[in-house]
Length: 65
Image (cartoon, rainbow, N blue to C red; front, side, top):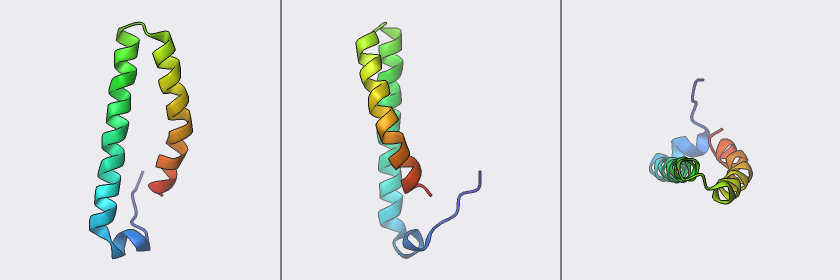
C-alpha cells in the first residue's frame, strides 16, 4: 500500500514524524501485552486489551491517512 504525505505532514514533517513514531511505539507495546496475555492464558487481560484495541485502531488508521 503506497504511503502519501498530506499537506500538514509536508509543512511540519518533524512533528508528524514524532507523532507517527509514538503511535508505532504505542501499538508495539499493546501487541506485546496481547502476546503476554496469550502466553499466560490471561483471558480477562486479553479481553480487556482486545476491547481497547478495537476502540483505538480506527483512530490510528485515520491519523495515518
